[in-house]
Amino acid sequence: MKAFVSGPITFPDDYFTTHYEPRISAAIEARHSFVMGPAMGIDAVSLRYLVTHGVAPENITVYLSENESKALKERVQWFIDFGGQIHVEGVTSADRDAAMTRDSDYDILRYMSIEEQKEFYGVDYFPRLSATERNERRRQGLPLWKNPGLTTHEPGKEKGGPSSRQKLKEWLRGVFSEPSNT
Image (cartoon, rainbow, N blue to C red; front, side):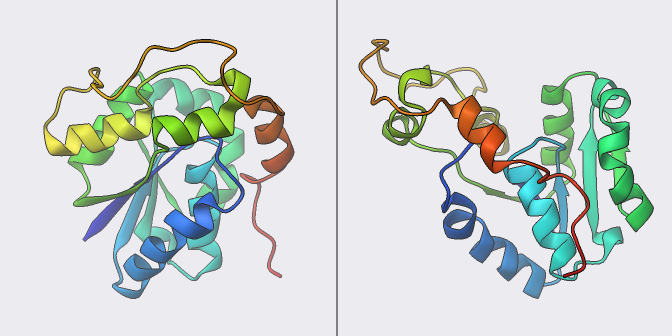
């Protein structure tokens, strides 16, 4: 079995531990293999988790679009040197995501509800259909660009706080870098 791991780029502190770690650990124990994209966030954290939890590099494939293969070559070189597999497909990230759905058996994913997004992103919240939700909808055969759950957005009604970009920069310092052996 092969799992497609996808998730948000920015997320609350306990998000990976709560929503991903148990499912990824179960898949590791079942000796499943994994595919994921190159995005900072859940993709990068999951890759590091797999590598540091003994998953053989031949059981992990990072998919890149043609554009990403050029732009991110240096960032993924440590994974290539480690023996990990890189698969280049499509021009866009949507093409790449469709290939990962096609080439996998099931998803390990979670996206925040609209209320969770408003709480987390605060003033930076905007209504959208995330790539992670589109991945789930693709697997289910649902339209990719229609989200009946989206509501009218009223800017400024969300709670304040650091922007999601500030949170991301703070949390992801070096997360896609080579894991240490300690």
